[in-house]
Amino acid sequence: MSPTTYRFDFDVIAAWISPGETVLDLGCGDGSLLAHLVETRGVRGWGVENDPDNLVACVANGVNVIQVDLEKGLAGFEDGFFDHVIMSLSLQTIHNTRAILDEMLRVGHEAVVSFPNFGYWRHRQSIMNGRMPVSESLPHQWFDTPNVRFFTIADFEALCADAGIAVRERLAFDDDRPVVEEANFMANFAVFRLGRS
Amino acid sequence: MIQSQSVGVVTPQRVVFDEPLALKSGAVLPSYELTFETYGELNADRSNAVLVCHALSGSHHVAGHYADDPGNIGWWDNLVGPGKPLDTREFFVIGVNNLGGCFGSTGPASINPATGRHWGADFPFITVEDWVATQARLADHLGIERFAAVVGGSLGGMQAISWALQYPDRVANVAAIASAPKLTAQNIAFNEVARQAILTDPDFHGGNYYQHDMVPVRGLRLARMIGHITYLSDDSLAEKFGRALRHGKHIYSYDIEFEIESYLRYQGDKFSRQFDANTYLLTTKALDYFDPAFEHGGNLPAAFARCKADFLVVSFSTDWRFAPERSREIVYALLHNRRNVSYAEIPSGAGHDAFLLDDAHYHAVLRSYFGRMKR
Image (tube, rainbow over all chains, first blue to last red; front, side, top):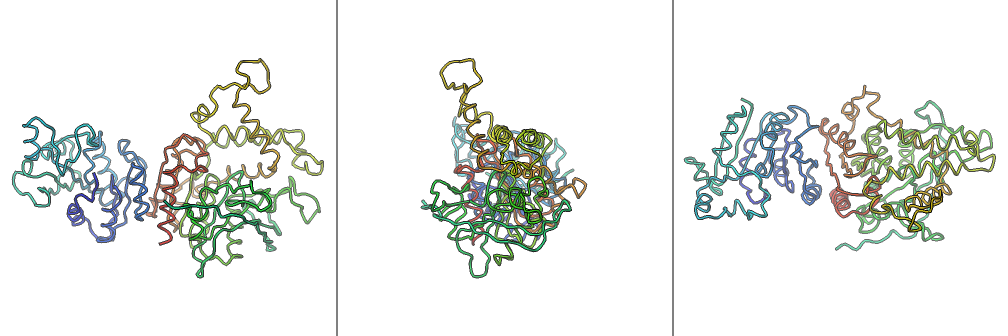
């Protein structure tokens, strides 16, 4: 999923980043979020990618990119080195969900995670009708999706509680419209700001 | 699609340096000569120079060919040229035969002015840092204050890294490819076997074989054969040669039976005809000594604290001589110092040799990196 699909999530994330911070972006795609944060927040940023084409795109865009397989964690990155570790719309593509969240909060003081909400009402409707959801926020068919973990906002919050991860802020959206009530039903994606409890 | 071409006919140049050079070992070389080649044009503000550092068996002949020897194509010709990833329409590219080499620069086979005889075993030990110091003098000679980039693979990558540490203000970008911040014990072990092959060759004569009009061919040949095994991956050897038999059956002989034997003997023979044994010894020692963290209690991030260059680090998945893990050490040391660094681990079956091949993804990364630099 290209981060350029959700430009407005860049602004949400940028609002949580203070000028001059040190930032790590996991699954950074073509580096456009990092480029945005460098431009608007003057961050020192590095991206992590494992896709060859995205890697080349980051280098071409002048964004620092380090090739790492996120399934293997962030060994080599120092504890508490980053102010924020971001993962924009990639968490659902990683098998080792809990380990990567732990790693994010090991190398960063805070983590920012955005993901598509599989509990969105249209997705539920689709399942009720007997088909896996395919939409703008979940554009892939079940047989070619890069997503390997299917979870809702409520699922994620339960995991955080269980793993001792503090939810410091949560924003939910139905496309680009903020959702305040019944987020797990009304929002098709969410952005979390996380810390250690 | 970009049309890429060869730089065409090239001519080596020579320059003599008469200012004594204090070497890391403590020895002093009173004067020396370097052979080099250049491709492309140095721009008006002298900001587009790129130095390409060579590895163990390389030379100043990076790209193009010679008018009188059209088959002698530069060792990184697939990378350097008009329209190629390191585009000579944009950059002024320099290749230099390292000091102690055997392709024109002063080395053990040169005449020692103090004795009138070949240097031989008396040629001083040379380190990566010494090479970089001589390359800096060449840059002075060419009027280059700051390189746009210093690029190298393997031992050449070590020189590129050392540039950022020795002359932080004189290099903007470093591309360290299939390289390492130091050799492992296993890697030094391979070098030692290669050296012993040469040192114990009866024709070596303590390094003064020139006087005896001899070449320790057997030692060099063995050294190169073991080198070649380590530059390739198990898979690439299996794919290229497998258990293929020269005669289609076992002939119960020590002559060539398996094709891999033929390949190694061919490579060994070819190398022993064109390379100097003393240069081989010196160069493998330079590899072994390289360890910028040594003076910092083994702390590589501390060694990198002085570096200012932006880095591109590249490794290859099946390279076990300069494994991806060694490249990652460089990356994390740079990250610790908040340097700009990008790192690509190229999937390749070709082992260490992959850095010389024109894998599409690998060259796309380099093309993007150099392309970004010129903007």
